[in-house]
Length: 206
Image (cartoon, rainbow, N blue to C red):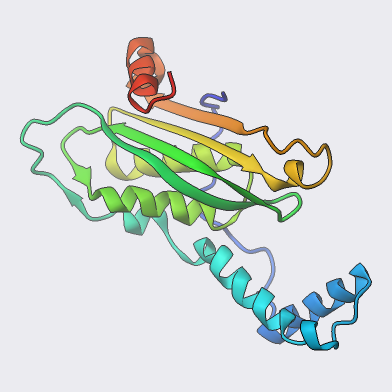
């Protein structure tokens, strides 16, 4: 499992070049089909460029969404609650930035509130925003924790992700049963080993 690094993760994706047109993207798909050895004009493939571009718009919609905005609506009436808030087994559907191959798994997220909490669906949404970008699992894990820390100023945040990467299961080394586990602990979750271990037990990973 990986832990905190001193380098703060980049939470906002900044494009380095103007976004190509939809038509240019479809032409690029046609080129890849031809490079693979097939005819992009044959009946079964004629509409594939359009389908692929539509799929990309869904898979990578996280570039158009801001996690800080999602976490901006908080509730300050916590009635003295100061223990963990945990969300277990959040679905993760992302694509690796090295091969644009899917990686699929689960995320577990917890934070220790100070004087405010956020709607639980917002935490799920933050996971989804970072997942719907080209990613490495390590970076995504750190980004989720940092976004929660920045918005809620909790006493600590814990994030764990367990996923299988198709860039390893369907190509390369071809090991379909290997999953990757990453974790990020901040604040009291990082400094208090007993608290960290309690989180791991409570999510069923101990």
